[in-house]
Length: 476
Image 1: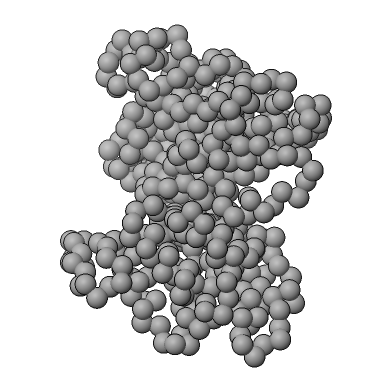
Image 2: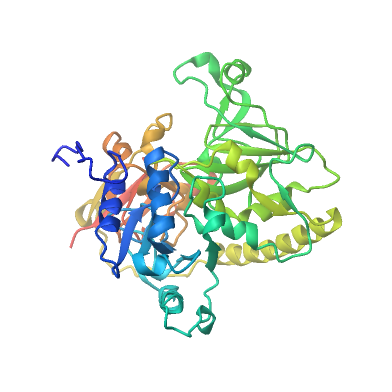
């Protein structure tokens, strides 16, 4: 590889490619000794990319080298990278003794997945390590030990190699096989693409800069209209609208009310019910329920929240990973009778009301701090560096869904802001007036709708902020 990134591989590689990650894995596998073992951290593209070189590499690994795959969460290498990765466990000797591969998914490693990586209680690594060691010992020729001697973590499963090579793409995402084997309930599984029950539509974006396409009567949803929620959100209005001409001259479709809207590009797995007819951008798939006697939209949305990890595992692509429409239609959910669906929805909504009530109590609690007249009054400018933020161009998708937290005034609510609802890229940061505001900075909403104006909060993370926020960075 040249310093500028150009690759000129020699023809001794078993897989011919110009992708460095493919060549590195190929090289390490080929150079294992007969009893050698390797653990290789790889970007997620190795796991599922459909290009020929990736498939050839995975075929070689499954047939001759691979014994386990450990899936790591996005953000585990923060603050340097938010990319999703996996660990390939290669063992030339053991791979020839088994017709199965172990898959383990790590959701927590003992630290938060934000840029600060604060210590948390949840840690899947110890149980995963014990299980993995037990699995490898069980493959030894002289061993009487079994993997059953170690308790299996909730996110571990053993998959036959014949199932992995069944369709020829050798996908190494454990979630693809977990969904097929985890139907432990009595309700039938149905595909999201089942004709007569569901109809899936993709979104689209009218051409920017054409005035007659924008600011019309049709609500047009983007990710900002689907905030991160505990369950599913409701869409009754959108930040932007398009005209009928903008709809007709783009790939956007008008989605009827009470459909299930799912984000399927970059930020994958946010789910909402649209209570009014809307169009969406191309980052969404919308499930239109064609047979209302068989499915309740609220239940379908809740069922989809349970398979978000599968959606994320099936997504392909580089910076903006996306689950295709065809793969999205392959997703399956259990479909109980209509009355059972309604009971489930009612129970979940009851829990949500309790949560919302508790949040309202917290939001409305205001401690009284007496102000003594003898305290000196000083100008804020003498204590703080005061600066506003900025918003990258929303019409430029390369500016959004990156790794930099971006805070708007909607999060300012008299507390500590520990996470963001939206993220921007380095290009979005550099091509706007946004800047990285350090942790511990006081934010104030300087303008906005209704009671938002005047609210204050403290940043618990390093983040960019929008132009409606005033950042008070205390000096000394």
